Image (tube, rainbow, N blue to C red):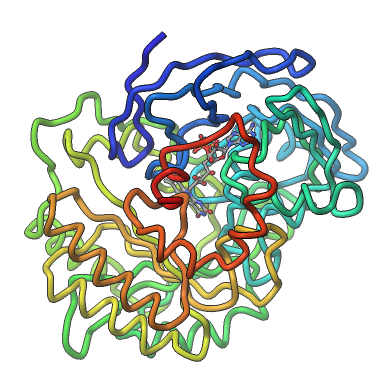
Length: 434
Ligand SMILES: Cc1cc2nc3c(=O)[nH]c(=O)nc-3n(C[C@H](O)[C@H](O)[C@H](O)COP(=O)(O)OP(=O)(O)OC[C@H]3O[C@@H](n4cnc5c(N)ncnc54)[C@H](O)[C@@H]3O)c2cc1C
């Protein structure tokens, strides 16, 4: 069945045939056209799209296979959502070892992008906690991959953008928790130097750190924002309200983007000043802490029919402060801006995947309404800064980086090619391979 493909950024729009997978023991459907495994399409750009080809929808592989509540070792099919895992394991005192900012990702998708979370400085990427998985290729071959067995295939597939085969199931090591609560703090900082100072003094004592920055502020307030840090609370505090149920939704796509430079500036101002005190301490349920955006269903429709572009980069420590200043200034000067500008320090644990994005340094993530050529020109200017500082841009968020930049950001790409399944391709892969 022909299908209009959209990732979370709703750009680009593609056409694919979608074939649902539902039996992990069955061979992959044969296809003349290139296929691509699809998780829950929470990637923003075109790495989960396959224009003119076939998407193998792995969401139907949604069975739990085994869970040992004594050790926290979980085996499940690759289409299981993080939200389903949390529902199962949190009441039994376990938590995901690493989670991105939405719980609506699949295990296969999380491995395909080797996702990171607010605890990267402590826990590394999701791939560090994957004990094993099965890789099914279009030629029918199956391999069990782990850091010890078929280690080269493991390294190619973690962060391998779905290009090495279909992951049918995976075993992951969960993390012990006393309950669903976090002791959290939010610190206001006046500029980028304030962010770096808070990061330096927080990373050893706090498992989770992340900052929101006001990317519309300029001058002395360039890069001002709110630094959030947290640890799992030792036990469940009494009389805390439960997290709010999902109540908000964008029911339709408005004809034009509701996000423009005026609404962005106003939002950023208000958000920064909403916290009057320099420091606020709270005990929070894990859901609003890790997944604030999951509370508004289909929030991505706010950007209208043209969609939006996410941009996430990382710059190594030596150049990070200068690069972040240049990036934020370039964005503020362009009046582009973003509601969701997020800044975080990655730790120095090397990522397990050949094409994993996380590496030591500072990462900045923002979204931009798709304003056509002007937006693309701005993102090219950001790429030039990142490339000049030997940084990298995250494929999971990308819809437009050049092949030359991809090759510079991911030097292992040449060795990676040997692992690509000849029956698999993606819109992203064709674009950066040109
Ligand atoms: C609100 C929001 C916040 C986010 N925050 C973060 C964050 O903090 N950190 C972060 O790292 N990412 C973040 N992301 C991005 C998201 O975590 C990744 O794009 C993730 O990979 C999406 O998972 P998915 O199941 O939707 O996979 P998809 O987007 O469908 O696919 C992702 C990749 O994995 C491959 N794939 C999917 N299933 C399989 C399978 N069974 N076998 C082999 N390959 C497969 C696909 O081919 C594709 O290349 C965020 C996204 C959103 C929408």
